[in-house]
Amino acid sequence: MARTPTVSALGMAASLGHDAVTACAAARAGISRAGPLPVWVPNVDTQDPEPVVGHAVDGLADGFEGTGRLLRLAELALSDLLRSTPAADLRSAHWLVALPESLPPSAPPGLLEPDAPAAEPGDAAPRLAPERLRALITRATGAPVAPQRFAGFVGRVGWVRAMGHAARLAEQGTTCVVGVTDSLVDPPMLRALHAHGRLHVPGGSVGLIPGEASVWLVVGPDGRRAAQARVGAGALGVEPAHQYSGRPPLGRALADVVTRLGAGADAWPVTDCNGEPFRSGDWGHAVVRADALRASVGAAWYPATSVGDTGAASAAVGAAFAIRGFARGYAPASAALLLAADATAPRGALTVLAP
Image 1 (cartoon, one colour):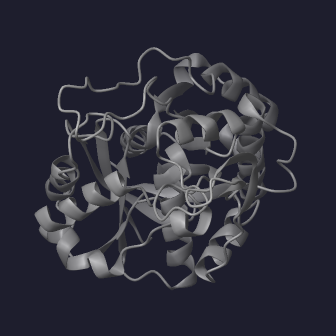
Image 2: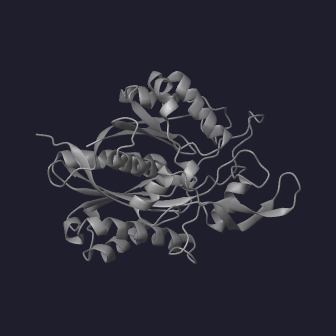
Image 3: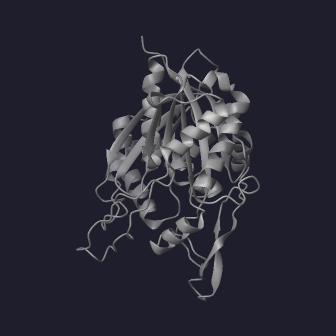
């Protein structure tokens, strides 16, 4: 008999705190800790160089860059998880991780360039190798993770895929740990985003404000441990008119995954909108197309306003906010509708419900 998949533990690190309770409480209070980052770009009005502003994890992540920074963020969030879940309980778990999405090699084609080829991710090396995460998990839990108990996914929608896989394993009685880590505040990533015209720059009115985060969730069968949330249904889709396609946003795939999911108007949306015109257009068109979104858009949450764009971790940050909302009694409904849209074609949605 299938068992209900539940979330029994949560670990998190973001700009608002090095643990889930602190970070989510600060977001609830409307606190923002955006500050200057070590990359300077021209002000759009004066052309004078000014620092990019973003949401970095200060203190315990200072001095780390590249892969080292990603691993440090993952370590901080794992430490938070292990404060509520003994390492011994996780040594037999399956580990499912969503890895940071690599940018396509070229900038998005302009909408006035109809003959320009669409840009795709290509064969760029992953920004975080799965083996490095496996080694980190081994150190944290004190036991090696066998290859058959470890799987990697990619991007924002990769996290939705990982949660769906974890839910299916939980229904069979298996406990999983689902994790994701991403950072858009590293200098190379900031320069690439600026070159692609996606970054919010001084004097500008639109563009993403970079952030970073790591989130780990323990997903297992109900009854094994006290539940903080239940994992509902998920759906995946493909959007041909994506940000790097050179086509205007239409929101068809995002609306389709929400419609197929069957989420009602009582589920409040938690979206990964980040201030970019394309993503806002995709979201706006999806709201018009999907009855459930149109009925609930007034209750939508936008985590990027609190912690910036956290890349592949965006939907997981939204899940953390929702789970703490259930725990503290300020969630606007008993079900959160988590939305994920990669910069390229993948789209996904997942429901997380109060325990």
